Length: 465
Image (tube, rainbow, N blue to C red; front, side):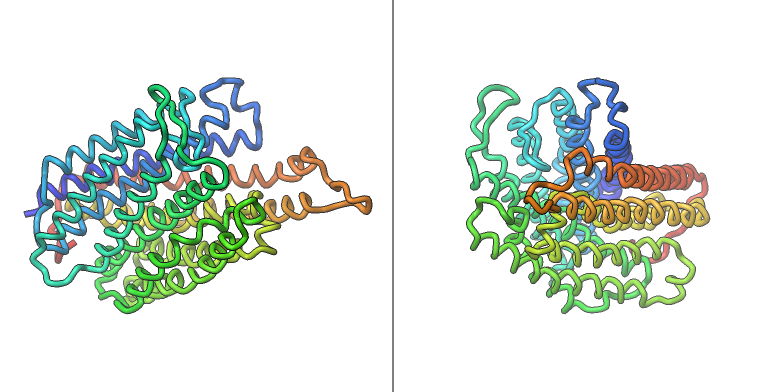
């Protein structure tokens, strides 16, 4: 019944892995350049200014969006007990997304950029993304509308929220007046432009990198441990809390700026309130994941899910903390923020993706996983890599912040910019080592999954997946 849905999901999942590895390798190149700038070889196409947005866009639009689109469509079809509303449009969405992303990344490498954080694509690419996202929305909600079940499964609430919020904010943030092909200027200016930019920037994190993965976890974790979701009430608190608070929190990126103080204060209050839904979601997922003690003891895929939940709780504790003025003054604009982002990106998003790939790809191909021993090797590499990365930047970032604010008795800066750069050198090396270990773990996973798919003997899968 779900032959097309499974083929489509395989395509999106494989694309997510390929884009993920590419994006992480580019990120490692950028990290190495921060330690040894000579590694840009004076080449205009591989200097830090070019490869940094290539890294972020390959991860966000390549790994994350392929993961969310593919699995959201699979989950909505399976939980609604119907096929997707349009087979043709679903494949148009898949190929359109990959082609648009390739063109977009090439355009950034050639220097065409709007300069907006996580929204560097110029207006023709933005139009293509909006059209494809609307197609995604049509397929998702159209399928949901013809469901044969009375209720809407909780994962679909999160996916629906992601589709609506991301579509709306991406469109508004990228409104521009075209000047010529591949160059346009934002219709917003000054403080208004900054507000809209961080409305998008923070919600790209809040919905694409948070709500989307919370939703898929509510489907895959119960399947993996063969237990029901611990509490549907907590899942509702998470959903409505994220919808109600997250969209207002982005202005905590603009503290101590010309943005009106009352708008900054709204961002602070809403950020602190985010502790409620975030930790409700983390507790719910943790209790579901640990409800099957035997599976938790022996299955390393469960360990990856548990780690992702722990990093989610950590990252969502840090976020509101950094919105408080006294902490923001020290930590913002330092490498602490990069460490915070990657405790979420590598710890939460990365571990969730890895766990889902290990659980789901063998099911899709009806094969046994090639090696659980390699999963354990991957588990060690990934965790050592993440810890190297984030601890280096936590320590370095706080030192960077304190030194930047340090004044002499006469009121001048104690440390110059170059002094602080030299202080950060060992921490930049720690960051690169951590990233390299994490990528090495990803390559172990790719090998393990390729060997799984190449197995000749298929197995009978018990139960729905």
